[in-house]
Image (cartoon, rainbow, N blue to C red; front, side, top):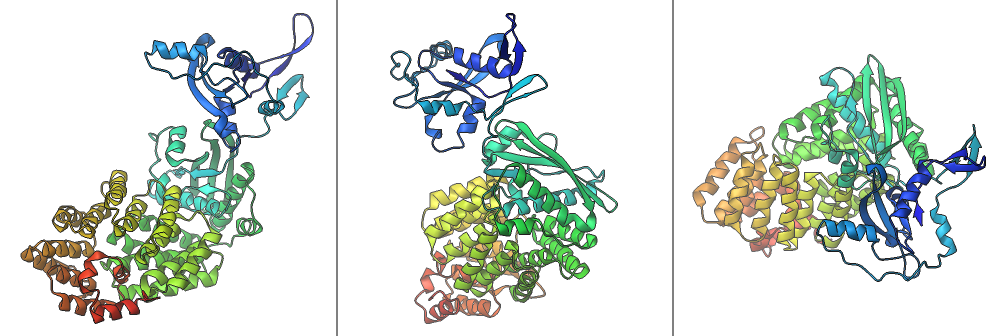
Amino acid sequence: MGIHSGPVNEITDLNEQANIAGAGINIAQRVMDCGDAGHILLSKRVADDLEQYARWRPLLHELGEYEVKHGVRLAVVNLYTDTVGNPAPPQKFRERDEQRTETTTTGPVGAGRRKVSIWIASLVLVSAVLVAGGLLFFHRVEPHAIGSIAVLPLDNYSGDPNQDYFAEGMTDELTTDLATISRLKVISRSSTTQFTGAHRPPTREIAKMLDVDAVVEGSVRRVGDKVRITAQLIDARADRHLWAKSFERDSRDVLALQNELASAIASEIDVQLTPGEQARLTSARSVNPEAYDAYLKGRYFFNRPSDENLSKAITQFELAVKLDPNFAPAYSGLSDAYLWAGFNEGIITAAEAKLKARNTAEKSLQLNEASAEAHTSLATYLGWCEREWAACEREFRRAFDLNPNYAFAHDQFAGILAYQGRFAESEIEGRRAAELDPLNPEIAVDNSVSLALQAKFQKAKEEVNRAAELDPSFFFSDFQLGWIEIQASNVKAAIQPLQKAVTMQSPPFVTAWLGYACGAAGDRNAALAAIEELKKKAVHGYVPPFNLAIVHLGLGDRDRALDLLEQAMTGDSQWLIYLKEDRIFDPIRSDPRFVALMKKCHFDK
């Protein structure tokens, strides 16, 4: 039996009898000719469709390609069970493999043609026979189910390279809209951003790298006050177009344009929307075009989070909320940027960032309670700044309800769980973040934290090495390798990667950890030099006390380290989240002052 899915035509044969012919039948015949007695062979197209259903998946066994008439190469799949079909490789494939001098392991050859159960009829994927214009078509029930999707970078067709940020922003926003659909897995923008330009890999290869069923690609054109998006939906595994359409709106209605496009894609792939998802995708407020432009620029810089770019992101987000005080996403973006800058303490102190991050997160929620981004902003604030663990978790859970595909939320929750010592839960969230954003080096680095804190040092290094392969210029990979060596008590081995990270436009905390490693390794002069370097990097004359504390801890000056940790508590340092699990604090854990700090950080709850 040979099975293929494709069109056939009604014809009148030489005997003037009605008959059918066409590519659908021709290829099915070629597939059947590849087999021996008892074989049920499928074309790859049919097998790809069946692979989406759990009951069929175990029955499919790929045989590879075989050259048939006219040099056509067919990818063939063998279907069999214990009672149906023939498990042995067909003779033609065995001969092919022998010619390639490869060894093939074969199973027992079925004796004669076996009785085929009635359910095999369901393999013939035809739903109706329609006669129109003299043509007879066999129609498949539907394309194979699409449960995962990625939005590839939309091309900038505005004729101005300075508009690249706008095309990137449109890609990001469309991804965000699709990500709110709970029954659809959506890959984060940070994993798709590399697939831009004329030299990107073939669609099938991209889909395999991202593990998705379909991709969206297209272009953005902005001229005057008009925005036009042309998008097409591609079945990635079959590499065929399923749908294409253009959408155009005024700049003020760009949010409605994005919702309309996301809704059209959801409809095309026949994904069921919940009432809440339907409501979110059919309601969008107008936005001040200049404010939205500033917001997209803010996101553009935030996605490249050096201290310099975080400063630019804050400036753009602040401009956005000034131009449109009711635009909720800009407040969420501003909160995230403040929080990250406050963690680095390279352009703003932790105390300055804390109040601003909270106010903007709460303002975003006030304007749009149904925003997963706003709930995530508040959750990360509550975790990193307040260490209010229960409230933090509630906000993350609400964010997941609203957008289960928000990789940043899963990533941040994974880290906060790890620092509480909830490692199994942390690894689950970390894996989910990596599934949604598989090519993001930041997630790979973050996933190493839980592993290192559990003394799974080799696995932790593997995660970091993967991050370094994804982005060799990312300073955090080298910093994290040094930090992992410190957790493993290999302080001398930590020095080299930390020295490298210091040279890569890294924040001041990298210098602090290098100082710790040098001090703990017995190089007092290098540790003291790190303290002097930290003073040079002071923000408004303020040297973050946590940074100084860990250098003194490396030097063995425990009382001075505790003094500085208490100052870090007063200064709202986000780094105090490390106190519970980081091994560098083991020498002072029993000190009453450290125990008091742990309570202030709510680690006793």
